[in-house]
Image (cartoon, rainbow, N blue to C red):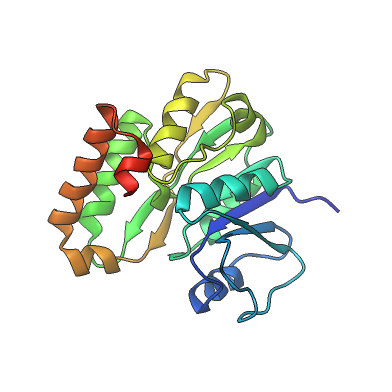
Amino acid sequence: MGHSLSIVIPALAADNRLAGLLDEIPERHEIVVGLPADASTDSISVSSNVRFVTSPKSRGRQIAAGCAASRAELIWVLHVDTSELTAALEVLENLADEPVWGRFDVKIRGVPVVGQMMNLRSRLTRICTGDQGMFFSREALDAVGGYPMQPLMEDIEISRRLKKYRQARFVAPKVSIATSGTRWHQNGWLSTVLKMWGYRLRYFFGASPEALYK
């Protein structure tokens, strides 16, 4: 029996964080986990709806490999520290059978103002971030050349491409998923925001994803 939704998860390792996320996802959905080539999958047990694929290490490349290996008509990309999926899953399960792409609102634990700013900016610009749980119909993704096989700024690049594809409808439900605020706390939320915007500006002015990744 085929799946109506494929969930692609890039991860550095098959660890307890990944296992916790997998437990939140109903078995009726296909799950494709993108891992670095040297990662082991022996440390966790998974159900029959979970498959592993490998690629060179980087979130963008692992997502691209996962999307290429997925089989459903709708693809949802989740980071491994994402939680509170129930309401978002209901939206995706009822999404019309048409070319679409979009994302959800994100709640960042402990730093709600950052998530609110990200959601507002994205709603105005249609440039999405990976923390917001981007999704796309296979028709739309194929039409723009698939998910970009690049190590950084992959979420910005796929947003740019899909914005130009007028046959796909942009959807940004006012439904939230949650993500960890650890990096924001460790590095300081303001310095993290400034660093991220620095990368975005350099990318906008022509810096390559490979240079930014290094």
